[in-house]
Length: 111
Image (cartoon, rainbow, N blue to C red; front, side):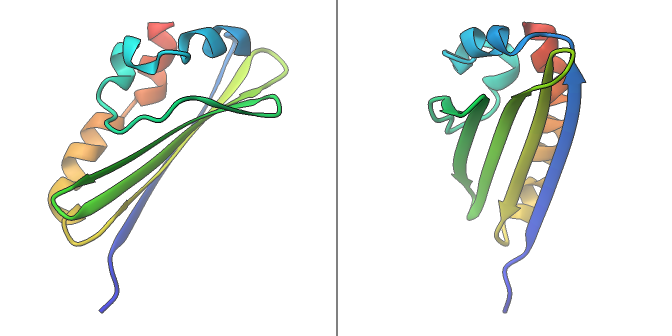
């Protein structure tokens, strides 16, 4: 039997420069909007892009997520991409949606 997989994706353009994200994401737990994302890994720089990943297992469901910050013409392009996999995902779907809903908006506000 196949394992269910749910994906979510959100994009946002902001006028905040990438340098602000670089300094603020150095300690992601200091930002209130990212405290809700368990299993955060250190920020990685891939060229001009900043990548923040998390991996979390709860109730048999595996959650993987990536926050990418790319330079844009007027500031930064934010891309949130995630996946919830496993049968326990049916129980956690509402919690993950509540936690990640408007995450990028709250992240920009926290800067």
